[in-house]
Image (cartoon, rainbow, N blue to C red; front, side, top):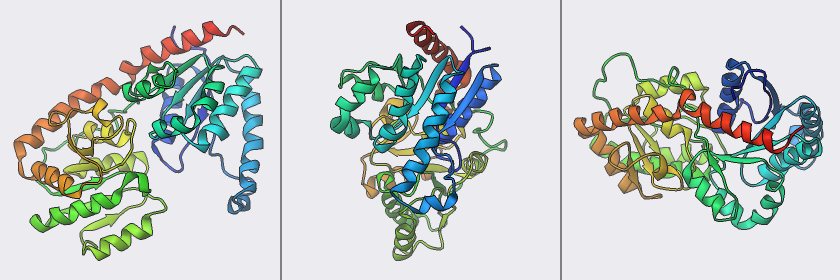
Length: 362
């Protein structure tokens, strides 16, 4: 089975903001259309109508939900298969579950593509509710063996379909690397991503490498606190907060960087890690969740315990000071990310669509 002529209702968020799942949804739509599939996008984060509704915390959910359900119903009348980009928490209950039930009502097979980094804690609380909806799903796809193991522990079998990295966009710089000390963090400014540890680690790096600089590319509710912390630590002159960048600006930033930090406390298959590797930027990451399933400590990245600024600083300084280690991780990372290209991922996704459609004949 190829994708030509297949009518796919792709349900998920779209930029802006340019988060990991939103970028993956947009990229998948572009790739499937490039294979001559018909892609019907149903956006889960569509702008509020009227815009003033966004300021009403309770009512705004209803203003978004009603048009969303109508868009699902219309798409189900024109689709051969639903592909639902799913996340944890309220995102599951408000967007993924309704998509499953609308497709069920119209006898359209559903592929749930679950991507929530907090799947373990979410399923510990809500596995019964999730299973209730998942019994109506033809196929469950997850981006990593880590998430497949999490779902298996709750009685749900999953197929692994990795995230897709665009190696034409995320690529090394065209000129040979000059030794530098530019460190980058590309995570949202939220507690789960623990940007505080990155700042405290950078303070230790700066003590030994006064020319080092840190760029934090992301936005979120912790921005004011993190900016204040940078000032308290005496880092204001060496730290730049760019806000959230689009994918082209992010790719350019990786090419300028010497090390990428991923300080998160929970993770599944972070695009930021794969994008950094594809850009020839070695990674220091916490060894949480699915991260050890996609990189190997000392081979394709350096892994450290979460919430440990001293360990993160020590690993970062190893890369800044050991050129041979830096070069080895760059080469291994570039080789590893070939597994996440569209030609490598496409056959598995096509097989999942084929199986789903065979299970629920229209």
